[in-house]
Every structure is written in C-alpha cells, then in structure tokens.
Length: 248
Ligand code: 8X3
Image 1 (tube, rainbow, N blue to C red):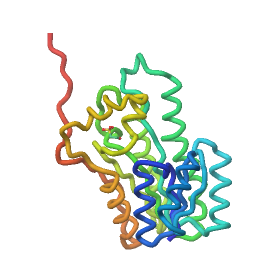
Image 2 (image 1 turned 90 degrees about the vertical axis):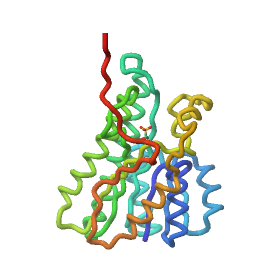
Image 3 (image 1 turned 45 degrees about the horizontal axis):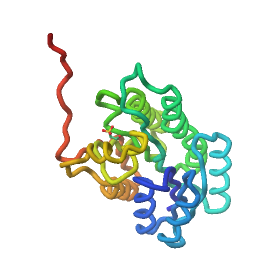
C-alpha cells in the first residue's frame, strides 16, 4: 500500500514510518525538516520516500498530494500524525501565538491533508485515514487547555468523517495515547526544558513510539470491512483520576 504520513521527522511519525516500511508498504514520509527525512530515508531503504511539507501551508498540502498521486501512486493510507503541544501553564497566562500554532498544526493541518487526500479515496472507494489524537482530548487536566481541545477536535472530526463516509470502504481511526516517553513531545511543550520534561516520565514505564507504531501496523492490516473508530491507549502506570476540588 501507499502511505502518506505527516510529522515523520521524529517521534511517533518516524517510528511509524519505519514500521510501515518494514511491513512492506511504500511510505511517503513528510515533515518540515528535510534533513531529518533524508537521514530517515537512508536508514529505511527505497520504500521510504522523503518529501518536505509544512501541514500548515494549505496550498503546499494540496500540491504535495497531487504530486504523490502522480509520481508515487494513489494514497491508500493517510496518517495525520503532525501535531504538538506548547505550554503547560494556565489559560490566563498562555501565549496566544502558541495557541494559534497548535490550532494551525493540530486542527488545520489535519483538515488540509484530509480534504486533499479524501476525494481520491472516495473515487476509488478505498482508503484508510489514521488521526493522532490524545487522551487529552477526552480528559481535562491543568495546562491542557488548547492542546486538549485540539485533540477533542481530532476525536470528533474522525467520527464525523465516518458519518459522511458510511457505506464506503474508507476507514477512519483516531488513536488517543496517554503518557508516552522517548519523543520530543514534552521537551517541545516545555520550551526546551529537558530536565523538567524528563521529570514527567520519572519512575514510570510509559508507552513508547513503538507501541503506537505496533497499533498503526495492526490497524492498517485489518480486513477492509473493519473500522476501528477510536483507540485509547495508556500505560498501566496511568489511569484517569479524580475531579479537582478546592476546600477552604
Ligand atoms: C499526549 C498525552 O497526557 O501529555 O497527548 O496530554 S498527554
């Protein structure tokens, strides 16, 4: 199959791209950082096709999908993985630019890629879209304000896509991981504070990008009539907690 994945220069995207390549798929790996993609391609062999893309650039997304379709082939699987969290402070102190960056990447990026790839899938009556959500889209926690809200969008957008696509052989899944270590996620969120980011995972056995890649590999290999709507994943050291109550 031909897979298009966004955010493939690091973290989940990099490991998912490698895993799907190893599974025998042709993987068009996209990200802004072309140098990192070239290194990934050199490690992964000819099945991995690196292409630079900023998912926030609407015209570029449509041009890339057209180029992939022409030069590589029709996209069977779209993995909307690019996304980020910025900041962990309360809403009233948040940086509005950071909020906009999360909305642009986590919401608009998903919209552009989906809208660009979907007509071809509908014309072929075949396709799979996998969106990277988060437990933060379901469970509120302090500091998750806009990040969590963008992931709630991803969850509901995935379900609403299926509502439009019912009866067509096009599958949509939202994967919603919890605590996951070994990626740049928390360092980015905490503006490069490596020590504080490491503290988030101290004493835990969190999920890893490999756990997520295993799940994606499993999803892609389900029989064509099987749609998994949502997968929520947490490590066994994590569970949802209590409501916050302030007592006087
Ligand atoms: C990543 C999981 O718990 O940091 O989306 O929001 S969490």
